[in-house]
Length: 130
Image 1 (cartoon, helix red, strand yellow):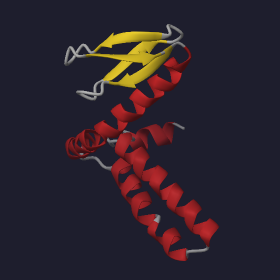
Image 2 (cartoon, rainbow, N blue to C red):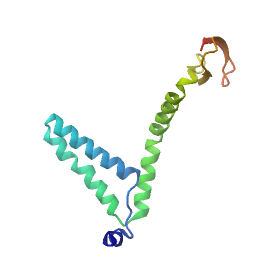
Image 3 (cartoon, rainbow, N blue to C red):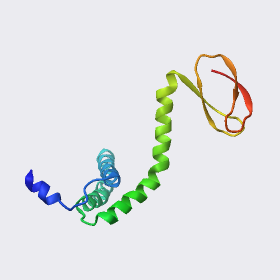
Image 4 (tube, rainbow, N blue to C red):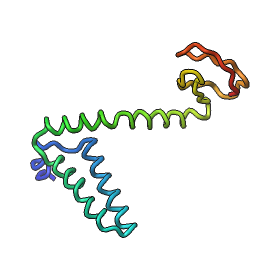
């Protein structure tokens, strides 16, 4: 194992973009093998090769910039999925509504019956059953 540590010294290693490329390669390979489309299996070598190139690269500043741009591109996806996950986790205790006027997301406790809701964004009121 010491030889591997010496080999990887000064190299960039893994990051979010490398892992995304690896996952894409696995998905393409799996899809190609299930559907018997050999082109997908061959296309999976492209992201796999890019992933290996990024991991073994010694130009860390360039790889960090690529990962930074990838993170900016993917941040809406991450925030959307985190919001949906929090809604699923909180679904036992809360109900989620959208304001009919400004479309803001509102979280209210469950089991309170019909209540008058005042939107904190637009200050309009509406009635909903929780």
